[in-house]
Length: 293
Length: 199
Ligand code: SF4
Image 1 (cartoon, protein in one colour):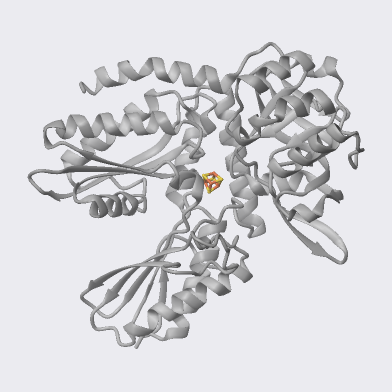
Image 2 (tube, rainbow over the protein chains, first blue to last red):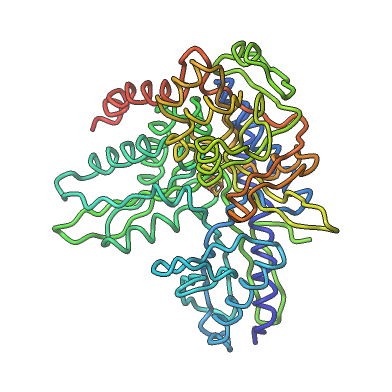
């Protein structure tokens, strides 16, 4: 039986880890970018980012003031008892983390403009459910900042536009975004499904580690093509010009309707905050992205 | 690219030495101001009322900080820059009336502000977006908070800072605007990228 309190505690821990410490693959990508960046301004910005990340980790302070809206991904084993309790546990964890870490309260009612003050509200925290076989729960937190969210784009292309249209849409979207999403960015690109499915896949693609190649060789090729194209723009760190506009591009797809060709581009800023853990039936917790202290 | 360490009040002459792509670090007094504080300062000026402090030679920081009070003292927890383009509306007047020498923010500013910087001798220093901890670390203490009635993010926080930076000079007094230059050159590569992708 997976204990409700364990879920809550792990979720608080994951939120704290996510906002204060970058996953290793992101840190390594930023360090590499710093080493290889060719523009002076870009290098200066990357150094500042790395120093900031270091300080945040040492002082256990959020690396950016915008700690985002709180999104969870839950892979729940069908044999887990108490599945119905998880939602409440995540809700409580969000309120606790907002106070304890602290996180910036970011849940605003779109009609009254009132901020709830604790990061909860209608559909927030947002939980993406996936039921799998087995008896463990895999929990991922994904606090998503506003600056990079505001430039995400959905394109309902024509099937005739095809993969060429997809590539052009990605390049145009990136050029339009400029300095806004605090580059260097990670891009999540998806095609197919429908308007909602494609954006969901693009957002989820942001969670893939940067150091694991895509197992599908066709997608891997598209990813590296888009990566090179993105870094040809010269937008550079913080839009001040340079080699590294993106740290990585992750592509996913779903089958599409014969008449539709939906494409989505999701942006993640350098503050790529995510953390995951697996909670086993016996209560054992395995942290997957961070070393939990 | 040259690295400069500046101390406030910064003279017009020193501001005019800076060029785009230079890096600067500021020691002394800077103050935060977003839309509301800009607006009020300019209203006061129009009405001939005195504003709470002399801004001559100081740096204005586009930032809505997270501040907490501990034992009666204000402590800056996070102080990342906010998007500067919102302040394009009135930054030219602000520079003209108060003689600030550095404007700190993220994302750059437009033509109107660039022209004012050239005319009155001020530069724009881009601070790394999101680097809130780095900014907070350079703040030695909060000297005062003015116009607190505007709320925590909009109030004018007067900060004593040491080596605040790195700031990349992105607009200088020669009319250069790095963000605009980059946008133009990015636009020029668009076709090349299309060709490379054969789209
Ligand atoms: S885009 Fe990212 S790094 Fe920039 S301010 Fe927003 S959350 Fe922070």
